[in-house]
Image (cartoon, rainbow, N blue to C red; front, side):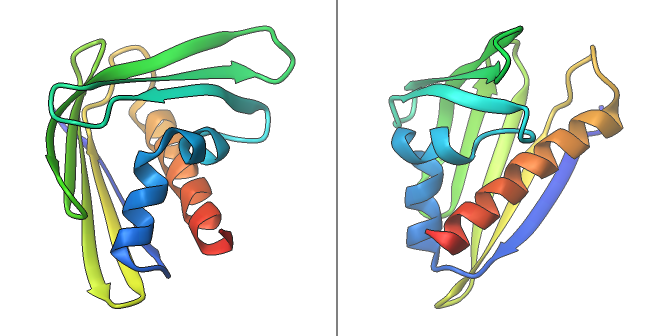
Length: 137
Protein backbone atom coordinates (compact mmCIF):
# COMPACT_ATOMS: atom_id res chain seq x y z
CA UNK A 1 0.00 0.00 0.00
CA UNK A 2 1.27 3.44 -0.90
CA UNK A 3 1.77 5.71 2.10
CA UNK A 4 1.29 9.44 2.37
CA UNK A 5 4.68 11.15 2.65
CA UNK A 6 4.95 14.74 3.80
CA UNK A 7 7.85 16.82 5.04
CA UNK A 8 8.38 20.38 6.12
CA UNK A 9 11.31 22.52 7.27
CA UNK A 10 10.82 24.47 10.51
CA UNK A 11 13.08 27.29 11.60
CA UNK A 12 13.49 26.13 15.19
CA UNK A 13 15.80 23.76 17.08
CA UNK A 14 14.75 20.10 17.28
CA UNK A 15 14.25 20.27 21.06
CA UNK A 16 11.64 23.05 20.70
CA UNK A 17 9.94 21.31 17.76
CA UNK A 18 9.77 18.07 19.76
CA UNK A 19 8.34 19.81 22.84
CA UNK A 20 5.59 21.60 20.91
CA UNK A 21 4.72 18.44 18.95
CA UNK A 22 4.41 16.15 21.98
CA UNK A 23 2.64 18.17 24.70
CA UNK A 24 -1.17 18.26 24.97
CA UNK A 25 -1.48 21.95 25.77
CA UNK A 26 0.37 22.75 22.54
CA UNK A 27 -1.26 20.07 20.35
CA UNK A 28 -4.73 21.49 20.99
CA UNK A 29 -3.59 24.85 19.56
CA UNK A 30 -2.21 23.69 16.20
CA UNK A 31 -3.85 20.32 15.42
CA UNK A 32 -6.57 21.36 12.94
CA UNK A 33 -7.13 20.85 9.22
CA UNK A 34 -8.47 24.35 8.56
CA UNK A 35 -10.22 27.25 10.29
CA UNK A 36 -13.60 25.43 10.36
CA UNK A 37 -12.19 22.99 12.93
CA UNK A 38 -10.80 23.09 16.45
CA UNK A 39 -9.07 20.56 18.64
CA UNK A 40 -11.31 20.64 21.70
CA UNK A 41 -9.08 18.41 23.81
CA UNK A 42 -5.80 16.54 23.66
CA UNK A 43 -4.80 13.81 26.09
CA UNK A 44 -1.43 12.13 25.75
CA UNK A 45 0.47 9.53 27.78
CA UNK A 46 3.72 10.07 25.92
CA UNK A 47 5.64 6.83 26.36
CA UNK A 48 5.96 3.61 24.40
CA UNK A 49 2.70 1.77 24.96
CA UNK A 50 1.04 5.02 26.04
CA UNK A 51 -2.10 6.33 24.38
CA UNK A 52 -3.28 9.59 22.88
CA UNK A 53 -6.68 11.02 22.01
CA UNK A 54 -7.30 14.31 20.23
CA UNK A 55 -10.93 15.36 19.91
CA UNK A 56 -11.56 17.26 16.70
CA UNK A 57 -14.79 19.24 16.21
CA UNK A 58 -16.31 21.54 13.65
CA UNK A 59 -16.68 25.00 15.18
CA UNK A 60 -20.40 25.02 14.33
CA UNK A 61 -20.84 21.95 16.56
CA UNK A 62 -22.29 19.75 13.82
CA UNK A 63 -19.63 17.01 13.95
CA UNK A 64 -16.74 15.76 16.05
CA UNK A 65 -14.47 12.72 16.21
CA UNK A 66 -11.57 11.34 18.21
CA UNK A 67 -8.19 10.78 16.58
CA UNK A 68 -6.64 8.24 18.91
CA UNK A 69 -4.00 5.56 19.09
CA UNK A 70 -1.02 3.99 20.85
CA UNK A 71 2.65 4.99 20.75
CA UNK A 72 4.73 2.05 19.54
CA UNK A 73 8.19 3.64 19.39
CA UNK A 74 9.65 6.88 20.71
CA UNK A 75 13.23 8.05 20.21
CA UNK A 76 13.44 11.52 21.81
CA UNK A 77 14.04 14.35 19.32
CA UNK A 78 14.25 11.81 16.46
CA UNK A 79 11.23 9.59 15.86
CA UNK A 80 7.68 8.75 16.90
CA UNK A 81 5.79 5.74 15.57
CA UNK A 82 2.17 5.27 16.53
CA UNK A 83 -0.77 3.12 15.50
CA UNK A 84 -4.17 4.76 15.17
CA UNK A 85 -7.26 3.15 16.71
CA UNK A 86 -8.22 1.86 13.24
CA UNK A 87 -4.83 0.11 12.90
CA UNK A 88 -2.93 2.48 10.59
CA UNK A 89 0.76 3.16 11.26
CA UNK A 90 2.12 6.72 11.30
CA UNK A 91 5.85 7.47 11.44
CA UNK A 92 7.08 10.96 12.32
CA UNK A 93 10.77 11.78 11.93
CA UNK A 94 12.60 14.80 13.36
CA UNK A 95 15.88 15.63 11.63
CA UNK A 96 18.23 18.33 12.88
CA UNK A 97 19.43 20.31 9.87
CA UNK A 98 21.44 22.75 11.98
CA UNK A 99 21.14 24.41 15.41
CA UNK A 100 18.06 26.40 14.38
CA UNK A 101 16.44 24.26 11.69
CA UNK A 102 14.50 21.00 11.91
CA UNK A 103 12.92 18.85 9.22
CA UNK A 104 9.80 16.85 10.07
CA UNK A 105 8.92 13.89 7.87
CA UNK A 106 5.62 12.04 8.13
CA UNK A 107 4.89 8.63 6.60
CA UNK A 108 1.21 7.78 7.01
CA UNK A 109 -0.87 4.75 6.07
CA UNK A 110 -4.01 6.21 4.48
CA UNK A 111 -7.49 5.14 5.48
CA UNK A 112 -9.74 3.35 2.99
CA UNK A 113 -12.69 5.75 3.26
CA UNK A 114 -11.26 8.98 1.87
CA UNK A 115 -9.26 9.74 -1.25
CA UNK A 116 -5.49 9.56 -1.03
CA UNK A 117 -5.12 13.17 -2.19
CA UNK A 118 -7.69 14.57 0.25
CA UNK A 119 -5.93 12.80 3.13
CA UNK A 120 -2.55 14.04 1.92
CA UNK A 121 -3.87 17.62 1.83
CA UNK A 122 -5.40 17.34 5.30
CA UNK A 123 -2.19 15.96 6.85
CA UNK A 124 -0.18 18.65 5.06
CA UNK A 125 -2.51 21.37 6.38
CA UNK A 126 -2.11 20.12 9.94
CA UNK A 127 1.68 19.94 9.62
CA UNK A 128 1.74 23.42 8.11
CA UNK A 129 -0.34 24.73 11.04
CA UNK A 130 2.23 23.17 13.35
CA UNK A 131 5.02 24.85 11.37
CA UNK A 132 3.36 28.26 11.80
CA UNK A 133 2.68 27.61 15.49
CA UNK A 134 6.32 26.72 16.21
CA UNK A 135 7.78 29.65 14.32
CA UNK A 136 5.39 32.09 16.06
CA UNK A 137 5.66 30.60 19.54
